[in-house]
Structure formats: structure tokens, C-alpha cells
Length: 223
Image (tube, rainbow, N blue to C red; front, top):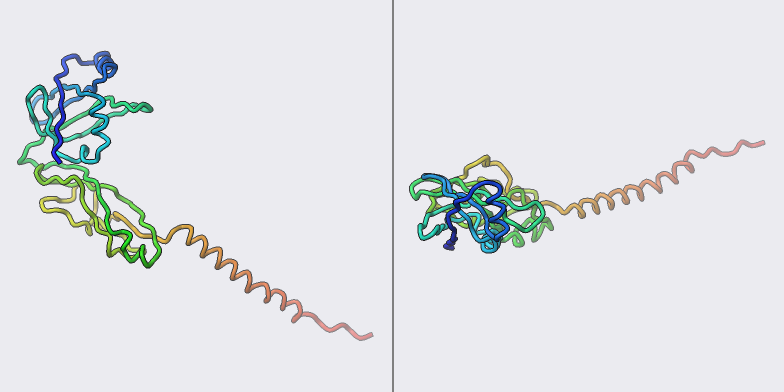
């Protein structure tokens, strides 16, 4: 998916200038990396709706600033604590021959057909929803597909099990043995089984308790 965003140069800086921009429906931002930082402003409504799309967070985008186009990545943005308002946004320029580090969302498929769910009655528990990867900009995917079709009950799906597209490698703090997904017995089923076992044990104990006094009773002494 090709994403293009429009911006204009921002000349005024400082808290007061940023406040005035926001009141006018604009968002202050910055583009950094490779060259001098570029101060920009963007339309708030367009940017707000773009941020709701997953691809906007993990794609190489074209930033058009008054006719000059650059390839950028979204690196950070700040939201108002309780309003649906974008306060600031940061983009980073990218170079075609330099690797980038990026968080890429994971899309899980075939969980409902896995042995752990279909025959084991388990539920999928997601440990990770994204992976940090390193790659050249041209190889950056919008998402990484994770096939859970063979996952059994109680067996975690590890980072090392993720099949990465060509040109990608795991980066960041991930380790090969880290769990991405597990299929577990539902908590309610565990509690129900424990309750059933306790009830069965109590039922077995009652006849034994009733028989014990009778067995221990002594015949009455003859007068």
C-alpha cells in the first residue's frame, strides 16, 4: 500500500505557536535524519484518521512538503490525555541502502483449525502482537503472517518459529525462545474440573466417615 501525506513548512516554533496551530486544526511535527531537521505542520483530521490505520505505523510513506517529496517512517506521535487530538508527530527520513529497525504487527491465521483449539478445547493467548525487525526499506512488510494451524495444546509458538519474509531479521530485545502465542485450557474449564474433583472426593469421604463410627462401636456391657 502506497501512502502519501501532505505537509507544509512550519516557521513559528515554541509552545505558543504550537497551541495556535492546534486551535487552527493543524498538527506540529518534525522530520529528522540524514539532513537538517524540517519543521512541518499537517492537517489534523487527515492525520488523525491515518493514525487509525495499521499500515500507517509500519510502512514507508511519501511525505510531500510543498512539492518536495521524501521517503519517511512514522517514529512517534503524542495524543492529548483525554481528547481525540494529535498533539505532535515525528517522522524519520529513510535511505534505500540503509537498514531500518521497525515494529511490524503480527497477523495470526488458522488458530481455529489448530489441534489445541479444535480438538483440545483450548483458547489462544497472545503474548506478542508485533516484532521488531531489521531490513532495507524496500523489504519492509505491512505485517507478518503467523500460521497457528499446527499448534497443540500447551505448546508455545516461539519467536524462532515465525517464518520471516525474505530480507527480514529479528532485531530489538527478542530472543528465539520467547513465546509469541500459547494455547491454554480455559480458566473456567480448569476451575470446573477442580470443583468436580473436589465434589467427587467429598462424596467418597462421606460413606467412609459414616462407616467408621459403626465399626468402632463396642457392645454394651451386660449387667
